[in-house]
Image (cartoon, rainbow, N blue to C red; front, side, top):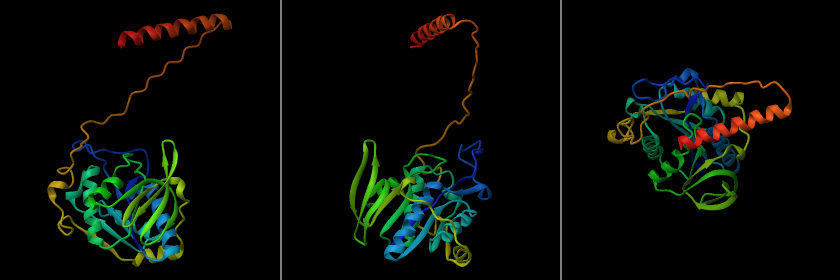
Length: 266
């Protein structure tokens, strides 16, 4: 079974720097890691390959340094990597990103299943998987917690819902996004690391994948960040000496005062 796993690089710490003009994340390959949710998608693909055979292609879009991230994915079980890297891709929102990834999928060619992490920890939108499926005009299942049955023609999954879980069957080719409860990702083996050093990794520009520049990057992003800031948190601690009855009366008075203020603001 030919599978594609979408991989994203995310900051390795909470200290994220933003471009002061575009308001997009400044990505430094030296300080990035594989998006944790994508490691679950990769592990699930490896388990499917161990069961059914086939191959796995790791697909990503980003700066040239993302090649290291893709080789990490190969070390953990992928067979090859494809990187979309071009200034034309920079500053993309989820719509422009899914369009770019769809071009990468078409460049890779035949596939039966695309696996994505449920979401990326830097954006938390959980939109890329469904939007990519829409771009490719294939069915999809989101928030998958278990693959119950799979072959070349169909897949049966258990997915999380607001009310519990649901069993869903889907014809292939298709796309799934996986939750972190689905498995425990393996560590790279020495054999895998050695394989990753010489495994095939292709890098394509926007022109090479036939991209419409008007649909890529900032230019192709209908949603843009206009302002970012860190919320200011203020705390005040008041100590009330005295007996319990006296403290209780003070608390009641404070709550009444807060209620009046809230009503005035409303």
